[in-house]
Length: 319
Image 1: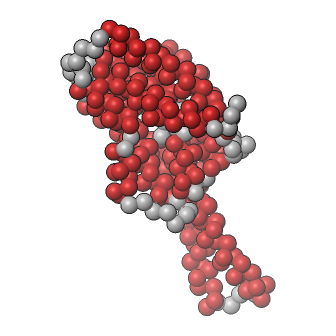
Image 2: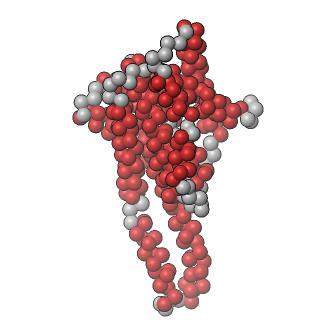
Image 3: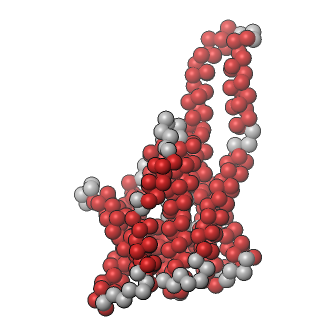
């Protein structure tokens, strides 16, 4: 297989395939009722994932951050104290390594949080979930996927990646806004939504439906190629915690919250399964762009993706 093929397929899906799929879903779906609800729950799930990841990280690293702060403070005062000669000789070396260690620690924390909250609602979510629910809830799938990608991957995800970055790259707010406005899926949704009253010729409708059917297998082919090209998932133990949070805890709490709010049936199923999508490939991109921990990003993507065939039947059985 040519080396350029995965990149070509990915760009084709990003600029043509997925926007075409969202256009068709936006054109054919019913947005007359509760349009705001899927988007509101998506935002809540994003912040819930962020909060759970922070709590889990602090529990795993309990006491570790405090010790680092204490050590940093002691090193700053070390020259004013009487230290053994051996310690004095090692002090410059320790002082030089500590900032590097802290930087690596923050990059690992950033990857952990992003892997726990950002899901693959685009390629996998849009490909899988429509087959599991009635057509009347396709609009929920589209709204969840768009809100998650725009506010999550391109919004909050970029902000957090920049915050935890161990490089000197710090993006301005207008750059994040520009990235959001340039997402082709967003414009495809807007055009599809506003063209609901337009009746296309039968041949055009059939052509669009057939094209959408081709997007699904192409997306899974791309996912397989991307997984095969990922580097750094040798240490899968680092990915266990964010994977469990992303595909088990987060959708479980989402389903429970939906039940308490009176959301039942396919509506609850859509929100639960979409919130439990595996870690997004955007995490690997953010890790490269902002110099975060690539091992956690790649391992979480791999582990959560291969676990998806086990979790979907679980939610179908429970819900």
